[in-house]
Image (cartoon, rainbow, N blue to C red; front, top):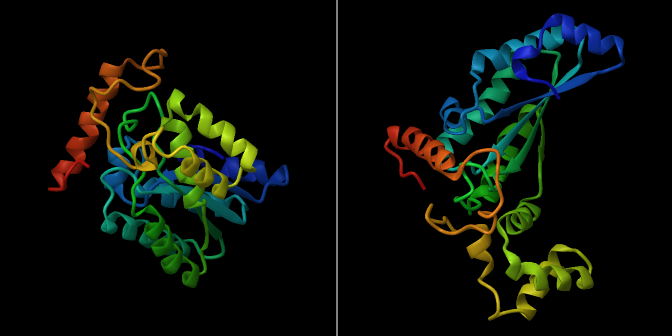
Length: 238
C-alpha cells in the first residue's frame, strides 16, 4: 500500500524485482467533491498517472481502496467512483483493477465522529457491485453488517460493557450482538443511537476525557469546513 503521488515507474520496477505483482492506493472516492469533503489531497489525474506508471514499471494489478456512505455523499458521487474505475480500465489496458470498498464508520477524535453510518450504505455497495463486476473489475466490499458492529464499538460508551460480555458468551457472531441487545432491552439506548444517529457537537462524548491528536475545537472547525463543501453543491450537511 503506497501513497498515490509516490507511484512512478522506478518504484514499480523496484517492487517487481522483489516479486511484487500489485500495489494498493487509497482514493476514498472517485468523486473529487467527496475527496474534498474528507480533505483527501488527490485529484483524478494523479490516480490515472499512478495506474499508468504501475503498468509501465511491470506491475500486473492495481487495487484501489474507497468508501461508501461518506457524509455528504450523493448517488452521483457514487456513480463517479464507478466511472473512474471503468475509465481506468479503458485507459490502462492490461492492468488488473480491484476496488476494495468499506462503509464509512465514524471514529473518535476525527471531524466525522458526530456522524452515524449511512443507512443507504449497503444499497450503495450493491450499486457499485452491479456497475463494476460486469465491466471486468474485481469489486471487494467489506461486510456492511460488520461495519455496523464497528460503529457500535467505535461510538460505544460504558453502558455497552454488559452487552459485550453477553455477546462474548453467545459466541461472537452478528447474531450474538442482536441476541444481547434483545436480552438487555430497556437498559441500553437503541442500536440506532450508537450506529446511525447524528450527534450534536455539544454532546459529551464517551471519549471526551481522553486527549486526542487534535483539540475538539479544531475538529469542530474541520467539520464546519467539510460541511461548507457539502453545502456548496446545494446539499444538506447531514
